[in-house]
Image 1 (spheres, rainbow, N blue to C red):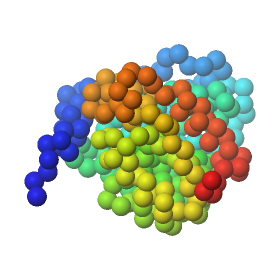
Image 2 (cartoon, rainbow, N blue to C red):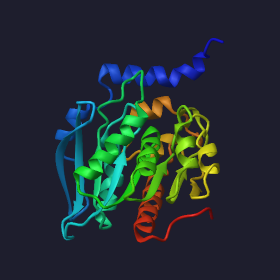
Image 3 (tube, rainbow, N blue to C red):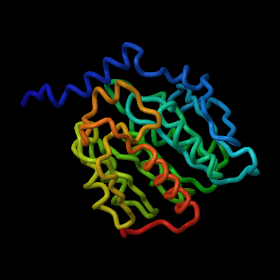
Length: 267
C-alpha cells in the first residue's frame, strides 16, 4: 500500500526544515547562551563523546545558590529539534532548585530517529555528570529516549514524558518492563504525536501516572517552539492560545515529586 501524502506531509516538512537550516544546528545551539534566564540560574556548556564517535553538545542549568548534588534531570528534545527548544523548561526547573542537563542528539538523522542510541546518550550524560539519582525527561521522540534510558539505568528515580511519541513499539516494550514511576503529560491526539499513539505505552504499565493537558497541541510542550513546528503540527484548539506555562508548571511539580519519592503508580 502506498503511503498517503497526508501521512508523509509532517515528516517531509520537518525534513525540509532540517536540510535547509530552519532547525537550529546542534553545534550552534551549544554555543548560544539562553536569553531571559530566571534570576539565580547559571548555565554552562559542555561536550561528551557518544559511543558511536559523534560529539554530544550539552548544557547544565543549575541554581547558583545551591551546592552541587547528585540528583539530575536529563532533558531531551524532539525529533530533528535541538536543546534550544527545551531551555524554557530547563531554566524553570533550575529556578526551582533542580540541576538540569539538556543535550543535542548527535546520532539521529532525518531518515533515522536512532531512539535506542539516543537513550544510551542520555544515560552516558548522566554518568558523565556523576548523577546518582536521575529523572529522565523528554519531549516527543525525546520522551521515548527518556523512557528507554530510565528503564536501563539503575539510578533512575523516575521518568517524565512530554507528549511522548512511540516508534516501532520501543516505548511499549520498555514500559512493560518498567519498575520506576512514569509521569506522562499528554496533549490532544494530532498528526505530530501519531494520533496519540503513546496511549498504549501508558496502558501497558502499572507505574504510569497520566496527566492530559486539555486543548494542548504538540508544539505547546516545547519552550520555546518555533514557526516550523506550528506550521507542521495541527493545533487542536484552532487558536493561538498556548498551554506552555501550565505544562512547565505541571512538569516542575512532577519532577519535584519524582525526586522526592512522592510520585508513582496509576492515579
